[in-house]
Image (tube, rainbow, N blue to C red; front, side, top):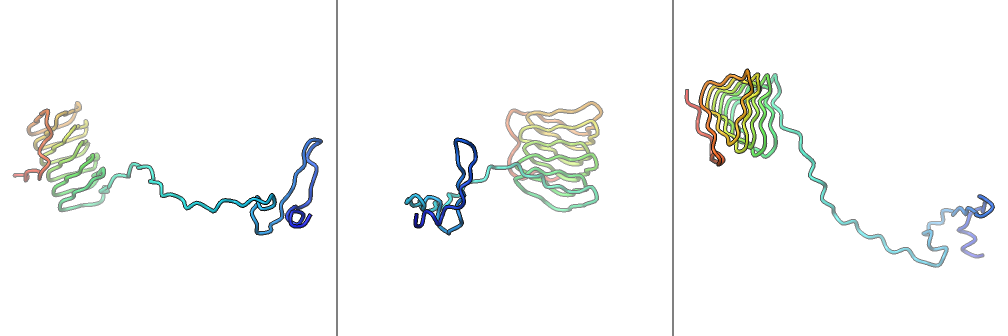
Length: 170
């Protein structure tokens, strides 16, 4: 039996038609007992991970931010923001959100307060709890019953300019 007998462990009967053979750990591959060599291991090819949606950047209800923010991910404002927001994706002003400044994004949803310009490349929505003082500009504008708007609404088929948002004037 030689090396094959050394690699095989005890043979036990499974059923009237079959047997189970246990291999001992000899450091050799399981194919070696049959005189075959296993192919060398193949280096794994890097696989791009599926693009998972990222969690939004959040300004918490107890936070205050002064300045400008630019980015390519969703942004949720639940606190006080003073300055300019220019985001490639979606901006949401939560019920506790309070913005003094200009917003430019693909889509903007306002449930809190905004004093400044709201400029969306695709859609702007003012929920029933929204209070906006300023201009709302987007190809699609939705204003829920109960929302308060003091200012102008501009709807055009083209997107607003992708450059800097105009400064807020008092």
